[in-house]
Image (tube, rainbow, N blue to C red):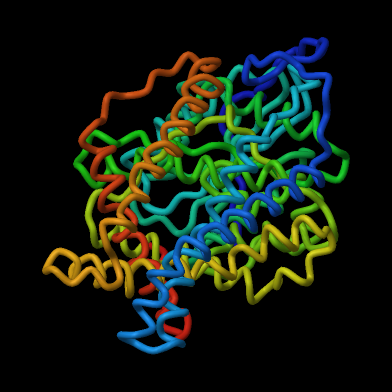
Length: 463
C-alpha cells in the first residue's frame, strides 16, 4: 500500500560541465600505478610473513600453555589471540599503506538523483534531516522521498511543512508494514532517476557529500553498482559511550571501508548513507526482509561480479546509541546482519576473486570476537591476580602497536578527509583513551549476543 504526494516545486540546478580531474583528498596524482591485484598480493604476503614471525615469537608461550592445558587448547588459545588477529590486522595495515584513492574525473556531475529518507516516528529530527539534504551543492536535479514506515506521530506533517518552507519537491511514500526494507522497497517503486541515495532519518549530509558520492561512481569502472559514503558521529558530546563511538566511526569503521574499497569490494553500502544504481537495485529485487538489509543487498549486488566502492570524503553525520542497552542491541543487530549476508551469498559465490577474498574475511570475524570476549578478557583478569598464563606483560605490548596504527589513521583522516572538507577534529582525549582500553570488549560481547540470537532464531529487533 502506498500514497504518493508531491509538495513544493520542482527542484533542480543548471549543471556546470565537469572539468579536468580533481582529487577529492587534495593529493597530487601519481604516475606510478600499482594494480589492485598486485596490492592484494603484497598485503597477503606481508600478513603471512607477520603471522610467521608471530608463530616464532609465540613458541615459548605456546610450550608453556601446552604444559598447563594440553596441546589442542593451547593451539586454540594462541591462534585466536595472536595468529588470526595478526593476520587480519597485518593485511589491513599493508592495504591501507598501499591505498591511493583514484582522483575524481567527474568533478561536478549533473545526473538526476533521488534521496530516500527512511523514517518511522522521527518527528524530532526529520525537519533537520530534510534541510541538510536540501542544502547540498549538487548541480543536478534532486528529488527527496520520505519513506514513511507506518509513523504514528507527526513525522509526515513536519516533513511536508519543511518541504513547503524550503520550496523543494518532496514525495511521501507510505508503507504500513513494519520493517525498514518494506519502506525502502515501496519508495523504490517511485524512483525514476538513475541513482538512488539512502539516508537515515537521523543522518545529516555534509553540503559536499552528495556531489562527492556521485562523482565517485561516475569516475569509477562502468560495472560499479554502488558507493558507500563515510558516516561519522554527530552526538558525541552526549556521554562517554558516544565519545568512544566517535573514534570507532572516525578511525575503525572508516579504515575497514577504505581497505574494502581499495579492492572494490565494500561489503556494506550502509543504509545510513550510500548511493546505488536504481536499475541494479531492481535487478536484485530491492532490499531483502533481513535485519541487515543493507549488508545482504550489497552482497547480492556484487554477486554477479560488479563492484562496490567507498568514498571517504562523502561525509554524513549520524546519531549513535547513548545507552549501553541500545548500543548492544545495535551491535548485535550488525553481527546478525553479517551472518545473514554470509548465508544469503556465501563468499565462494562471488564472481570476482578479490570480492571472494575480502568477503571471506567476514568468516574470521566471529573468531576474533570469541577470542577477545571469552579468552582475552578472562586471561586479563587472571593476569591482574598474578596468573599470567594467557595474558602477560609481553602480550600487553600490543597496546603500543595499536596506538601507532590508530595514530596513522588519525593523520590520514585529518589530512585527506577533514582537511579538504573544512572540518575539525574534536579534542576528545578521554573518549579516545576509553576507546583504546575498553571499547572492543563491549563490541565483542554485543557481537556474541548477536551470533547467539541468530543461531537461536530469536525475534528480530530493529531498535
